[in-house]
Amino acid sequence: MDLASYGGFPEIGERWGPSRALLMGLETNAAMQTQVHLEQESDVQNTGTSSPTSSVERLRVLHVISRLGMGGTEHGVLKVMRGLGEQEFEHRICAVRGIDQSFADRMQIETPAFSAASSKSGFQFPLFRLARIMRDYRPHIVHTRNFGAIEAIPAARIAGVPVAIHSEHGYELEILRGLPLRRRVLCRVAYAMADAVFAVTGDLRKYHSRQTWLPERKFRVIHNGVDTNQFSPRPDLAGAIRSKLGISQSRFVIGSVGRLVPIKDHGTLLQAAELLVQRGKDVHVLIVGAGPELPRLQERVATSTHLDGRVTFAGASDRVSEMLNAMDLFVLTSICEGMSNTILEAMASGLPAVVTPTGGNPELVEDEQQGWFFPARDFQALAKCLLRCVEDTRLRAKLGEAARKRVLEHFSLQAMIASYRELYIELAARRGVWKGN
Image (cartoon, helix red, strand yellow):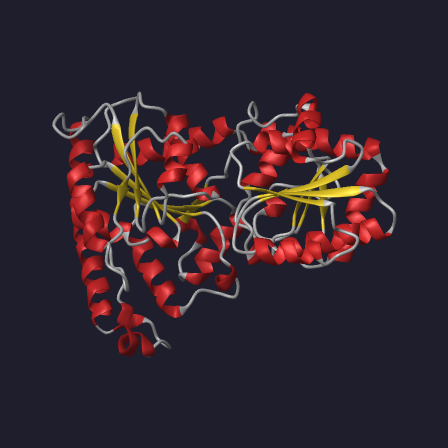
């Protein structure tokens, strides 16, 4: 791809300066490496065997993320590592912008993690630090996730890593109307260097296809999966968890799990709950998660005569499966979503899901089957959905059973792990570095 060929974008050359030349040089390097790989594949196909000096029994996989800390993508990486195990794979995590050691300790990450963060403040350009880490570790596969780790794709090509994979897992509030031009071009270049690019939903695939001027066929889709043993209905836990949180056993508990950030729009949930209390419904809101929006949400509750004493902020928790069993209903008010792990976890726990029909949510929930959709930011429409569940116990049970069944059939952890294994082995075999079955 020649950046100069982009008609209608004359400002690229003016604004990028040396970066443009660097990207074009990296792309040329990637193209040369791709040609070498193709020649190696041809040799393997002609002889019918892979080279005994390059093929291995265990694939070293370097999972690159922006930062190792609390978040859905980070938890997803750990699920993949543990699900694939150590018989066929060896895993390491690399954090481009640093490691939250308390999170690493809490999650009992046994293998050491690499950090490409610099101790210097200001502008960070970790490309060559990433390449150095890769040369030292010598992975067979580098798998980068989201834009925060995009530099690791050209770094993998510089370091001569056989397989480079990139995946997109969600949205940020500031990109809902489209990516900035510089980011679009950088993603286009990086995606072209990768052996495979995938998204966790069809919606994300369409979005990144449009933003990077690439056909949808360039992107695969691998849905997230949930551990349906860990996340399952446990009515015996409800009473104990509610008592611990100080929630009345008789109240109808509306729950939500997620980071407390603007894109999650927890304020709409509080407005809907306030409306129900005004109508005489004995409801309680349980919000699990932490983030910068917490003070504002707490102030909103404190200044409401209807919500005071009816909202519990449980903070970040490693016991989400137990928290879900203390809920009667799950709500996700996000303005947009990639693919919500918390929706899947709630559904697997037998909870009806009332969610916005944005991003990948319609790929998880079928309206009127496992829950309901309501328009983003529409607290009155949300209140109507909640009211139906509050007043109809039988309907709530029916939706909850259907929710768990859907996860078991379509979004199990086993299915997700199988898809990752197939992708890794397919690409490693294509490069002649895998001699397993």
